[in-house]
Length: 83
Image (cartoon, rainbow, N blue to C red):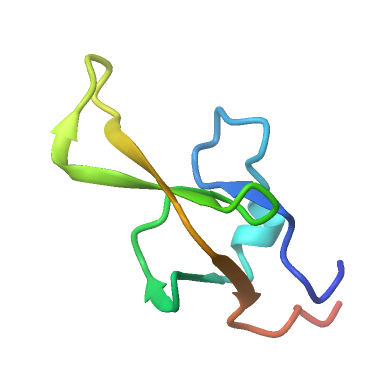
């Protein structure tokens, strides 16, 4: 695995951009210069993140997400597992 996070990543297992191996390394996200801990999905090349809209839920019980645009940085908080 490379030392840079993927361009696009989601925490939703039903998404095609979900990657459990990458998420296990604890990806950090900085949006507009501020570190965010509630990001559900991000795309660096398109400069956006999706975050939950408070406690609002859709009809399936999933959090309702807002798409915010701006500068996005991603990094790994932990080192890769030796194996």
